[in-house]
Length: 294
Image (cartoon, rainbow, N blue to C red; front, side, top):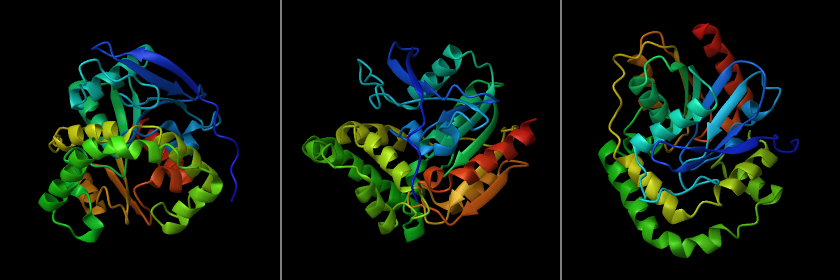
């Protein structure tokens, strides 16, 4: 299966509350506005069906601090507060008073935090392969690793990579991301073979421009997030989970959905990279959520 060229996005800079320069992006599409709260250190190419100008949505998002053209903060500050500030800065700059948020992985925590801290600005959340907080405890769930042990293991790996990442960087940046190497990733089933080879290539090629040590620093900041309270969530929410997700266990997403009145839960035979594996289902669920939002 082949793919058209990557969507033509417009990239621009926004200053966050603490002065950090954030690289934002948009498809300049027509239709309802959707804010993308992306996975940790990932890029807009994770959402192929939303990035196309004819998606039916005006999509706006941003790259996390120190990744994809966003500057590293002068004081090294990366935490949940700063991630929320970055999202709000992008919304304000784009003139978005309120909108639906499509979130993936760690971006799900950020989306729920924006909703909690800025009432009225989030009208609905599409939570894809992510839980509202305490992300590390849900990792390795398909392997039946206990939550406390999973968190300890993943935090330990992240701390190790903050040191070893400097040696890894020259290697990760030299990986030749062609359709052949992307197809090998698909066939390994780390990313579901249903994904489009060319779209996987674009996603991974951009992802591996991030320095491993900096990515590990971002990951450690995520490990400090407790579960977000869901008792007061009163907006439409859809949880789109993946059965073979080793980073966010589907069971944890199901229990989160059960704690939000009227939420929708759907589980696919997918991995953590669900947005690029089943982009048309993501678009379908986003349209269904918009209908509930009204």
